[in-house]
Length: 635
Image (cartoon, rainbow, N blue to C red):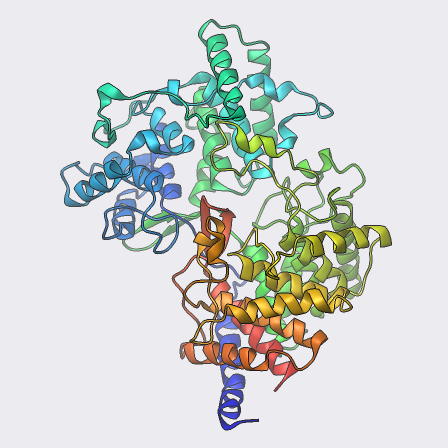
């Protein structure tokens, strides 16, 4: 071992201990870990709008939202989808709208800069459908330019070729309430009432309230939309009231006791808008629970007020526990026991929406959030199972039974394509992403390489198996998904570094004979290592394939690359040690004295190209996991 290598190795135990101590110090009394889940400012802007519509704005400290929104405006005048992206038009329009609703005059310097940014990029007419929808609610855009959603869609049977269960869970829980809102087309007067005419680049007299044309066969959907609008205008919509009643009943049935819908803010906000459209009173218990659920997603400081798109306690708890145990904390450490018992309490034994297509499975999965009975997911469940397998709990029989039930559920969620999706099976009608309403291109939940990798890793970690034919289908799917360059796409993390790390972790455990595929993936990771020893990848790689594996080094993405390379080294042998050593050095030298790492970049993915996330714990538990594995393997 060279002198430099010995110096690095000597610092690893202290780095691991500092990280462990930090994570142990911030465990919640009930046993879980939970950190902020950050997105762009539209979530907060839309909550401001909701409270203005309900008239509940004076009961919340929304004046602090103004300070938050101002703090997020960039020097160019706009607001971003993700860190340092140059600004996003729709995000900026919604931030501007919220500031105006909060009483900021349009001649305020920040507003003038924002207006200039927005107008130069095409103004309101060039924004996404959901931005226009929110503006239509307060008369700042016309409902004529919003796609129609006929409420009779609710009445299509489950065995019909299309029904609401062909939408992804997040699209379904957000769209069903909009069937009501889009039918009612309400326009609310807010206090203050606002006008956004200054944000139309073409001038208000030249606005064309029409859906954009693609000048190809997909324009047939525009013809259908015109037919739907004609039917609306002449009250010719079949089964209109029955559809609205079915949507209302569906919404009420899926509200959690905590008030949540779907565990995500879009579903919660849209459900609250649907209830408002139906004339519910602000003091109705269902409404009050919904408002409280939104409040639970708020992060309020002395000066600011912002809203998270979702909360991630189950995900964070499982990964923290796993990183602690794999870095040397005893499996029966009191903190591990508290965390494991909390996870067991969160196992879901209800039949959710997944059961519509999965007639074989029995419940026993985990969701992402504190409460989300209807939408557990495969990814969380696999990670929780792997974590529980490492932990030693007082009631091991209960733990094993919980794991068995979860593994059996996951096995029944396999898609026809061979892989696994996040929330549903065979949710893959891609034509839905071509609808005018679907400009976020996130209407379906097909099987993906990263979720499939997690399931296969779970099977390897837990020394369990599924039907041989099903296993071979899954392995074949994962191998087919490997890119010619050797990497794998990352649906839920940014991006190819995330996908490749997961695939290598799985293949090393369950298919070490696939040496060629493993080596190609590892070589790709080595090829995109940065000069500083770290790894990074910009969110822009979802739009521009030439940016695969390219970006400023981050702690989380460096850790993912190391995890993948360490897994490959277990199979290939003395492999990429220089790259691994440099990556470890990057993590050790960028760690703060309190045991933490910092990164500004967003490395989580909501909807590729359209919505990104910054998990504030990613920069903590993934580096610890990587260092722990390195120490066990090489030190």
